[in-house]
Image 1 (cartoon, rainbow, N blue to C red):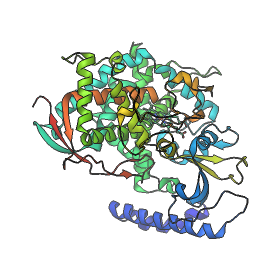
Image 2: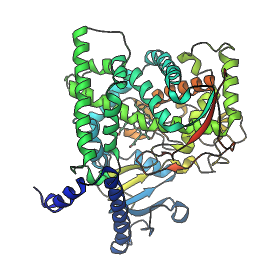
Image 3: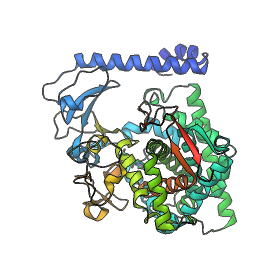
Image 4: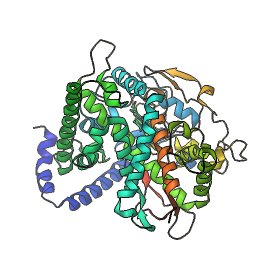
Amino acid sequence: MGALEELAGPLVQQFTQLHVAAQVGALAAAFIALSVFVHVASQFLFKNPNEPPLVFSWFPVNRAKYGDIFTFILLGKKTTVYVGCQGNDFILNGKAKDVCAEDIYTVLTTPVFGKDVVYDCPNSKLMEQKKFMKIALTTQAFQSYVPIIADEVSSYFKKSADFKGKSGIVNMPPKMAQITIFTASHSLQGKEIRHKFDETLADLYHDLDMGFNPVNFMLHWAPLPWNNRRDHAQRTIAKIYMDTIKERRAAGKSDAQDMMWHLMGSTYKNGTPVPDHEIAHMMIALLMAGQHSSSSTSSWIMLWLAARPDIMEDLYREQMENLGADLPPLQYEDLAKLPLNQAIIKETLRLHAPIHSIMRAVKQPMPVPGTNHVLLSAGGVTATDPTYFPDPDTWEPHRWDKDSPIAPRMVAKNEDEEEKIDYGYGLVSKGAASPYLPFGAGRHRCIGEQFANVQLQTITAMVVREFKFRNVDGSNKVIGTDYASLFSRPLEPANIHWEKRDA
Ligand code: HEM
């Protein structure tokens, strides 16, 4: 046993005897106290005149006061924030030898996803894994996904006890979390896996998710109840995927377009077929990566529609006018005919990008003096800068209309206008000069962007067909943001009033 574990042993033992709620409370309090102590103390202890201003603060915030580059202490580590378009480019397009994502994230992600994928392998292997995933997301795949997602949404509302009757009030985010996982698992992983979500998988994924608690940046190793449940869930889920892969192999080829089939036929550049355990771990990574970001975004969309019933009516009209008054079953091709429906996603991600901070470990001194610690990029800063987005704090999807008086400035109108680069998983826009980067940029850029757009546009279109929303108090405000977890999301309860259109 290491010295740290010897010291911590009796404490951990006492701790595990507490009731779970008490444990969470104790841990949260200890964590906050420790962070604030370390944060404050280090500001007095470490000062270097050659480095970016080391900002004193009780909690790490401060761009307005200190400009685009400043340093603060986050959990005992010097963390340099570099915002603005140049900062985004500097961090997100940094060279692999200079900046490193896996050093930061692996403690959290490896126990959740499993070995040999994403941040538990060399970056060149991750690039190949991303290429496999990206190639699988073809137009043909999306054409098969839209009806699957649309059906999942309709049947969810038919079955859910919270949407019985003609109208009611509901706390929306937990509902959107369920819709997101049902639609993603069915389309990306096939119907066998989707069916298992009605049985065991939902609870197991919940346990797995507990591993993403930010407290685990420090306590990922500790034999705490939620870490034990995380490890058990990881092993059990991986086995479910591996058994499914074996059953599929035994049953023979199918023309299904899901990601699992695609990975089963993929081979690394060195000639090795992707092993079953890696396919299983990539399945977990894919679902987890998409889950928090898409479910947070769809929750914000629903809350904004409740705050702006006029926009919800514009969306309904758009579908009637462009798809036909009888609203035929939604197809992939229909999505391109609904520009406002698309703008809803863009505008919501502008104000509520779920990955609010992107971190990299600095591997060697970089041209910005003194950044040999951790770098933090916050793309949301430029997305709410009035230089680029007039009236930046207003959620106004019509700003993305052609000729809008508050149209975004200096944002590329389409992919072709942007500088492209290939990091090993196909050409991606570099995003160097873009103030709008909800899907990141560079070698770690999202490969799920198109899937997320298809999923979110389909969910929004189906909800608009079914419901009229409004705020319970009739106001046009939405609730504040919960930044306490790794992915930002609405504070809860976030209640809205719903009414069925056919009522
Ligand atoms: C990476 C955002 C949905 C899979 C990223 C990154 C961002 C992002 C900002 C870059 C992280 C970094 O640089 O450290 C989003 C948003 C989504 C979304 C806003 C939805 C609204 C999805 C979905 C999937 C997915 C649905 C899977 C189908 C991934 C993967 C990476 C990634 C595999 C690569 C991680 C890496 O290379 O380090 N996403 N994402 N994302 N995302 Fe997404």
